[in-house]
Amino acid sequence: MLSFLGNLIWFLFGGVFMAIGWFLAGCLMAISIIGLPWARSAFVIAKFALLPFGNTLIRRDLVTGKEDIGTSGFGLLGNVIWFVIAGWWLCIGHIISALGCFITIIGIPWGWQHLKIAAITLAPIGMSVVPIEQADSIVGSRR
Image (tube, rainbow, N blue to C red; front, top):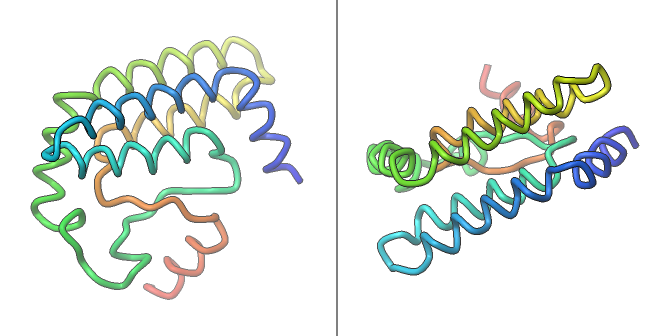
């Protein structure tokens, strides 16, 4: 229930704008065939930016149990290219949104969500959105 309320307030007070920013970045990347890996990652993060409460991001190889191109060295190279092309301005958008949320005490949880997503803008390739409970069981089984 708290996740639903957090996501509702998030959606109404600015989360939708950052999700649209991620979606637009994905659309720009999808224009060319070369940009499709970045587009996929941007759409995954757009989904997370739309409804962040109750979900988290985890490396895709931990979820699937096998490495793929996005979690290999090519993913690292892709993340560097992503940061240069689109990551920095999305990061700035999330930081500005976080500062706006931190103005009030009530907005602090939403500001933390913006900062969490801002960190993801640095390296979104190879990540998957999963419910927090699933991430806890995945990480717990790896210990």
